Length: 158
Image (cartoon, rainbow, N blue to C red; front, top):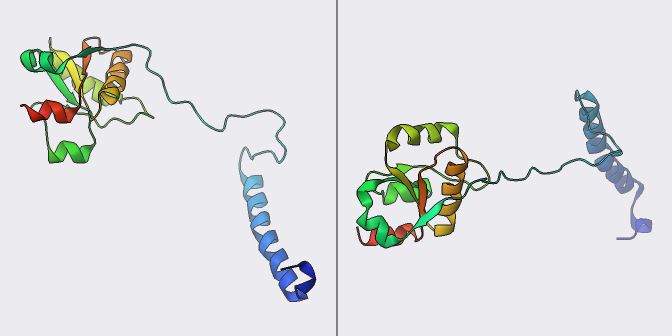
């Protein structure tokens, strides 16, 4: 609708609708200990990069995972709902999110349970298992491998 067709009352309503939130935002910014500048004088980060693993884990084939099952401490990196619906016997579940590193608590839990066994990470996809294994290796779990197959394939023949 062109501005000529607006009544004075509508124009005032529009100005109020713009002015009130602007005043609230400016007031809140001024009350902050380190308020945001109205005009940026230097570039600033608007996001934080995801942490990258600094070490690489080796893969284990499905066949080797089955024949050497007793040598491994299994880590289930699937979503909690999947772990609950179809658990892997003897596996330690670690809910993995690619955006955040594995918690120190989970790393400690693995270190205590591992003993002399090699940690074998299993996930929905081999790529996810690799990311989780790389993360664990970067955090000091040196004897860690990942299953180069899907968890579904691992569960199918158990």
